[in-house]
Length: 307
Image 1 (cartoon, one colour):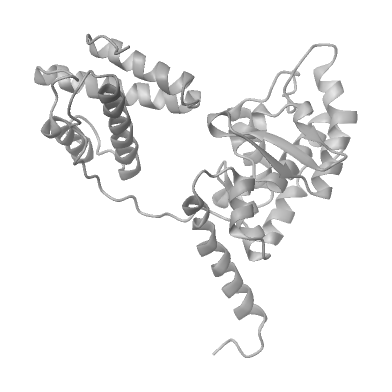
Image 2 (image 1 turned 90 degrees about the vertical axis):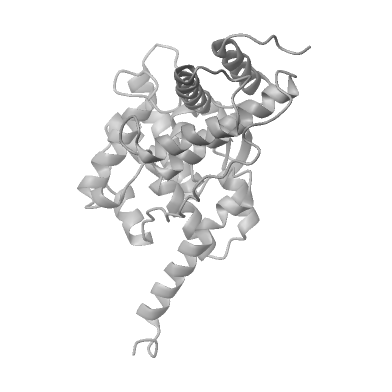
């Protein structure tokens, strides 16, 4: 049954419900889309029009104004790309539900996003980082297990903090990871990570959690699930002590995982599956990084490589 035309708010809520319930979009993406659509709705209201009547010029002027900084500071190209993708998806939904006959985003063109290569640690730098959590107290055991597992499995920050003990089979060395859109994938766990997580589960987590019930694998010093901010602080603290503060971002271990696998001879499709990328083109970004690492290693090691 077609949705009823009405206020922009009603159309937006119907669209977001569709994206959540039928497309399985993550809560973070839904929040971004909601913010984008509210901004677009306010723009249309100032123009005296609405989503049902807006034309290509309205959509184009909205995005152009953001890029030019008409209301505030100019918006980054990557953000413009995301907002354009949101509007395309929104209007496809309105057409599918017979709210509109035409799509004002059909001829939309946006600035191309420059391909920025992510920060990647060398093998020695990763080793130095993983050696930072020292001692046998519960927090040190947690930090060691967290860093080892993130590097061993190429986990996103959101995946690491949402992991539950039941998602790990340490005997088989397999993690069942729920990624974007609640899509599940199986990722091998290396031997060092298996040992670190096993010690944490036996000697660290029980002390932190105590008698309370807690479903998350990684917890804070109060025994509650580790937050994204908490994870960033853990990584930042150990990166700083390892002399890597300027080279670390929340996903640096994930980027390093992919690059080191490709440089070591792992095939692209396997890396794509382990990272949980829907499109292999996203994974191909790491081939540029791995080839550069190979060149660096070659020119450092080969006796006749230097001029």
